[in-house]
Image (cartoon, rainbow, N blue to C red):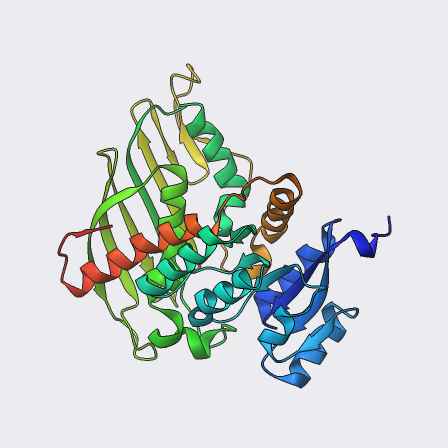
Length: 341
């Protein structure tokens, strides 16, 4: 069915990289949205991006001019990490809905300013902590909501992604001033899923190590977590794994069972269970952006706009995740000192 162009939410894409491609596809596939504009830093690359993925869009190289475009009601922020908070704040202040790539900032101050801007805005937001929309995570969330493994007393997640020189963001992601750090740029996924599935973190104790010379910041982190409900856990992040595939691990231990990635043991629920059972769904073990559930995220955001609800991961919620990532980074700098979130 043809879309009624006048009734659509016009989206302005900020950025022309691999993630922007996936955002465009998801936006074009939603029946209530269309790409009205694309804003990149290079004119020729921006025009080429439009020709390939959004031929009806107009082009900009000046972000403020795109924000002034009345046809743009929502902005999709797909720039490098260090621009996320600044440009999301600009979009909110321009009265636009915001789709924001993670992380929601690279330092505590800018995330706090971003959260404040979101609180003041009347517009909707969503942040691409995309695991919240992953089928395996949705299954696990249902199990936890139904108390299938009882009260969880230990929660653990690991983000292991060997960023190679062929990675599309390699040139900037290996610089702390642009990426923020390993726990911020990648490990925040693991932090976020623990918050989403289990609850808020009260304090952390962390250590880090640097095993590669092409990055200017520590590339592997390990942190012990104390949750607000008295339970404990662990989170790790590593960008060093060039010799093995991307891996995202998740472990939840409960009073009545346990979950390990797509496997679970819930003896009270399944009285004849004698070994681990597996969920028949994919696992989140791919670092390719084409593997991420952007469509589900964008659809959730559009539903929030149309029905005046909140998305599954608002900017304010995402900034709470970043507070944990910043505390872990600070603790590692202090050689394991306990840092309150």
